[in-house]
Image (cartoon, rainbow, N blue to C red; front, top):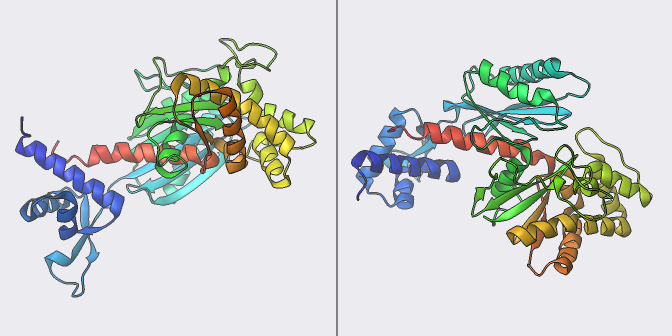
Length: 389
């Protein structure tokens, strides 16, 4: 059944806007070539999008630089403003951008030592100050990356053992106070989105990101889609029972699981056995500091021992999902670089008949904030780029 005229116009408008977003300002002639539409159809959609305040003339192209055919059209970046937050157990980071993702202001704030309500107020105040610094009067959408489970039915951050209560309270307060759409997603899932769009997995639509930071987690992308599981618990690899921990995890703690081998504290303890001292440096976990130091010093014995540990988690992922690629993300994965990734891949090849490439994440801890921004930008553009809906 052919699409109705209004549906066809909406499809064409969305296509043109995506091209303008991905390839930058374009002339009507370039839009015609890229979309395959007729000249009158392109002229109509340009008029519609200008009338909706979504695009504007941003310059002229061509040798003569005059006339309608020379006009270059671009998305109106200040049509909407966005904010993204990376909410950690010890800090909050925020960035405010325009609709195209151009950074207008950014800031971060440590949150250690603050109880529930003071922590919430500090985080809200940080966002308000950053928005004011950016010269923004109103936010269209806010994206939040936080540790913990996201209920797939409601999109809400669920209560999780061991996480500060102010995390959930912050999301609720922002939803109540802001005249904006507020989206929340698990931090590891957002890191995977960023690594796929701009980092180590740009050529992959199926892979698993193994998050190695203060804690450990995993994000599963199959056929280009995040898989969250029935309850939002897909990727809680810290609870994976593995040998070498001296115990088993439980419903209330992952101390006997994979976390006990690959969390920051466990990596710091392992490093100490090899004479490598490390401590937390702000947002950089001690585990990442140890790996960075070992990589620079050529401490092969420690890196081999760590690769043995990481391969256990990667082997479980490969046996169940066969993703073809595992990305070592987070601060520790980034610190280890290609060298640690190669060690893990070699050990994984000995543990599993399933061929799995292992790559080092390229975005490190910054992947969460970047993923939050990409996600909220996509959602805002979907809402705004449908003028005929």
